[in-house]
Amino acid sequence: MSNFSPQNITVALGQRSYPVWIGAGLLADHARWRALLRGRHALVISNTTVAPLYLPRIEAGLDGLHWSSFLLEDGEAHKSFANVGRALEALGRLGATRDACVIALGGGVVGDLAGFSAACWMRGIDFIQMPTTLLAMVDSSVGGKTGVNLPVGKNLAGAFHQPRAVIADIDTLASLPEREYRAGLAEVVKGAAIGDEAFFAWLEQHADALAARDSGTVLEAIARKVQYKAGVVARDETEQGERALLNLGHTFGHAIETAGHYTAVLHGEGVAIGMRLAAQLSERLGMSAPADTARLQRLLEKLGLPVAVPPGMEPAQLLALMRLDKKNSAGQLRLILWRGIGRAEIVAGVDEAAVLATLEAAIAAA
Ligand SMILES: NC(=O)c1ccc[n+]([C@@H]2O[C@H](COP(=O)([O-])OP(=O)(O)OC[C@H]3O[C@@H](n4cnc5c(N)ncnc54)[C@H](O)[C@@H]3O)[C@@H](O)[C@H]2O)c1
Ligand SMILES: O=C(O)C(=O)C[C@@H](O)[C@H](O)[C@H](O)COP(=O)(O)O
Ligand SMILES: [Zn+2]
Picture 1 (tube, helix red, strand yellow):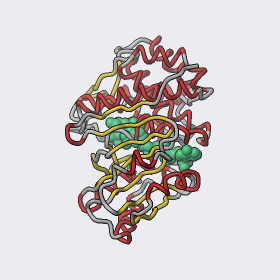
Picture 2 (spheres, rainbow, N blue to C red; picture 1 turned 120 degrees about the vertical axis):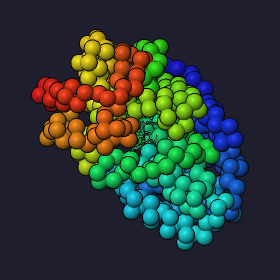
Picture 3 (cartoon, rainbow, N blue to C red; picture 1 turned 90 degrees about the horizontal axis):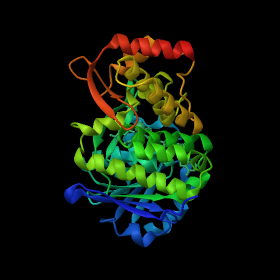
């Protein structure tokens, strides 16, 4: 049990700095967030699952504005270019001017697509993130990576566009399905595995409380992960260097998500499987010890996350998808590997044969 209090964390980006509020009852605290809207127009982007649950909580806060909503169908497969076009048409129908605001109410799919739509409309308008999944609270709502998937690969079209604020109302987690909650924990583990061994040890100690969704423990985990990510983003907003570390597990994970046509595996699940593969590859390259991989795997499994590549996926197919990752350059794979818990590194020119052997061994053992 933990009695952690509500948090207000700043993403420090000079004049574009913004707050991340984390606590209970924030969606209904209209006076607090309404003050962030500068103009007369707002478009709420949400989806068909989240809107019936949480749009009523914010509606009264939009009184007096010209506003409407644009709802996606549910699922990763709808984080598409076609839906950005539809969101822009909704902004057009609303008559949105440059001082309009997009409000993203939902998980990472809604947040990424809404942020990208805001970046495109009239070359960039304000948007506010109201994340309603654990994953969106701890990761996707913070840092300004926005975008959509293409059939050839994950997040291949997008823009850096920072929100004006992130309003994470932890009450919304009450309705989040168990599998989605656990997928969010993968991005929490990722932050600790990259650069904070003390946080990793804390997660190991609190794994039961987290799995049981003890509210104080969940709030503390969200705040610690957001604080960590906010620091990285403030130092390297557009991923010229250090920020790439936040991609631990993602080159493998995104390939697995794409191979599953964005329906077989949740993003957080792909990250969990991908982190284990990155640890196994690090071990194969002599960078880390088997005990580190085992410790990571134990924590992921204790939190109810998958660590095995799903059946039917081929090593060569996954390697081909990894070649289209945004971190690569000069025809070489650039991956996030590690030297153990809390010690991730960016490694360029990774030997493809070692990647293939890692995938083959993992798939054969599954
Ligand atoms: N921009 C970034 O930095 C960043 C970081 C991490 C992940 N992402 C992206 O985020 C996406 C994954 O986000 P996600 O895991 O939130 O998935 P998601 O947006 O698909 O939401 C997960 C599911 O939960 C439902 N849901 C959302 N909130 C709910 C609630 N409170 N109660 C009940 N159901 C609710 C959704 O309708 C959906 O079915 C991926 O596209 C990933 O690429 C982006
Ligand atoms: O914020 C970042 O930077 C991240 O890499 C966070 C990741 O968890 C997230 O999934 C992100 O969308 C991946 O970015 P991409 O550049 O690999 O598309
Ligand atoms: Zn991610």
